[in-house]
Image 1 (cartoon, rainbow over the protein chains, first blue to last red):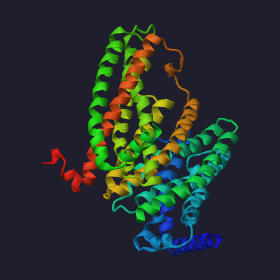
Image 2: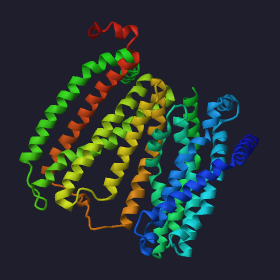
Image 3: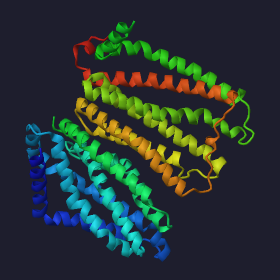
Image 4: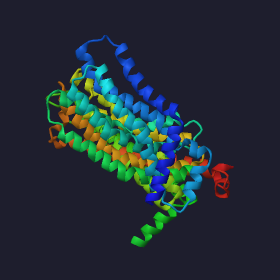
Length: 222
Length: 249
């Protein structure tokens, strides 16, 4: 089971490395969305500081929604996903590995990139740190929930819009806790409790999302 | 007695039986709902006393609160049906899960609209990002997601099971969404006051409210059955039993 996990993870990471522009484009999208925002506003230092964390979080949300489809798409189209599902190995493990690979090439770069965006929005240093930590805890949840949505829609010819409709409401708690923890720390409140809650959301998603994804994939593969 | 009940339940799992039984039940549900609704509305709008704080404006409660209750109740029904569809692959459970979504979305929209109409004179604004309003709005989006997914999948059986999974994921999420929004709202506590938090409501106002709630529930039951009948025909229209229905000729 471990070998399956590592093999899938290695394969997906290798595919991502071979297709570097795709990965870079996601990151670029994330940075651009966040960078375009101040341009549309009357730039005022305090206003930027106030909306900064939320904008970064919404950009992360959109970047995930746009990229999450790649998790199963090519494997579904060329039939390899069906072969994997037919194998004796548990589909849940395979799904977990694929989600992990997606997070490593999408979520993690967003976390690494977020301090730069924090600077765009004039966030103070400790808020930038908090923002990065919330993203570190929150983006895996986005990938995990995204996997469920993709598994449900991967069989559809035009699943993109439906996928967005499915995912954004499910992302509300992560967004609320993610962005507001940064706001909270800005007003000097201790942020331990929200961190615990984000951690709890992550634990819940790690346990429940992979089996749900596997079940949904079996329906889509039919 | 128990055996008979189990028997009845199993027979409902077969589309022709369901079609026959639901055809007989639905008019009763709707009829009873209409009678109770007429009575409840008269009681609530005319007989019930005026609120000393909100005047007559509070009377929208008799539509608003039952709609809000039903919006959550319907989601639970949909998730239970979805779970049955996934575990036992029952055709009828799939039908029930799929057909509950538009009704639930309707109740949610009604709750939001009446809430906003009520909010205008009470809070001075059509919309506040209050915890309950926001989670009701997210609930509406969840319903719309279910409907979109159902419409996007052509194979009806697959659509039923996909909706089941989505409904179950949503059920896990609804409490989390609710509490996250509540937490977020208490951070931003604005000038609004949630008047509902006063726990006691006088029985003369409560009884018509409960009558309306029962009426809404019966109405939901009736429309659910009718929608499910249509969906059954849509799926099984070219089966022999459907061709031989008296209304088919």
